[in-house]
Amino acid sequence: MSNETRSVDVIIVGASLAAAAAAKRLHDAGLETLIIEKRELPRHKVCSGILSPRGHRFLLENFGPIPPQALHDPTSCRGVTFHFPSMVSMSMDFFGGTTPHLHRRYSDYWAIQASGAEVFDQTSFIGMKQQGDHQTVTTRKKGGDEVYFKSRYVIGADGPSSPVLRAVYPDYPQQIPWFFVGQKFHEIIDCPLDEAYFHFWFHPELGHYTWSHARDGRQIVGVGFKRGDNFHGRHQHVVNYLQDKHGVRLKPADVDHEGCAENFGPSLINRYVFGKGNVLITGQASGFLNMIGEGMSCALHSGAIAGEAISEATIHKRDLKPLYRDMISTEVRRTTDQWNPLKIAFGRPHEADFPAALMALPMKDRIKVLRDMWRFVCLYKEFKWGRKIMRESLARLKHGRYPGVRWQ
Image (cartoon, rainbow, N blue to C red):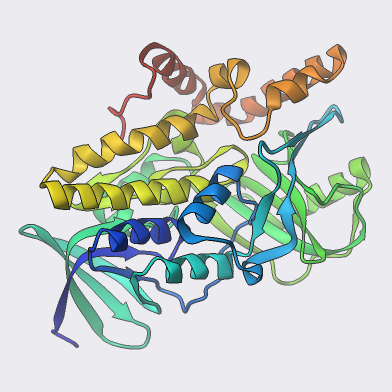
């Protein structure tokens, strides 16, 4: 066992887009930053890969043009199509044009390399212990001994099941509902769904989150549901529905299906977790997730804010926790606005114009869509989110922001 301890300014756990954004800010500020990643890089990431326009702008402004190998085929996405049980469909183009279809294995690696931070891959986060004004972080190299680091700050950018979050708040994962999101890949026989769009179904019988789109010559069929249900059965039900209702004819799923646990709730009900002391949580680990499940853009922006907060705290000798929470409130506002029924009805919180698409429908179809959306929302009734969402929506209306009293 190695007893050598290396000192750095910041350790970031997880080689994610949030990590890349945080590392870029920290490296540019002159802070020695180390990223640790449990898998070998470039590593696979379960993700549809459809980036929002805002996330695209962030990558261009901070990392430059996206290299061709970091894109799937089709290389871009024009917008989103919503489908409803009444068989009404609404296509909405993204504001500002098409956005890239990221191949997360290579896009994340490209951004991590461009951040300027040092990277240790095949290195697992084991735990950490507060000692004075720093954290002693224990890691283990794959197949090797434990390695220790002394770090002034730690950032957990390691996804929904974040080990860093569990180290800071061991009981938090038991306080929120968890969902399983899985996708399978099919060779296409015939698919009338427009491959230029990401397709999403507001259908309570299909699950809490159902989508499909083209990728690299195959069709993704994805389902999300409360953890504990049968993935294969859920998936086959959706495949049958797509064939019966949309004429989508697919070959049996390939063997390379995949899935992961997701924390859908925090963005809806303003129940984020941002860390404690000199440990920050960011990206989807803290609860950021845009509507229709796109988390890359808020991961990039929240990661950058985490890096900026540490830089500001270091340079100006400020208390990190209140500083980060003040700075991150802008991202909370932007993300939770997307789930806010008052903002959806009377504003434009998304990057595609849902109200305009709705008003373009005949009146009878508008009524069908609103009825279908209400029935879909009722799918979440068991989590008792309705009152919480309305409470936060009214607080946003009154104060112009979402209160931080329920953040951890």
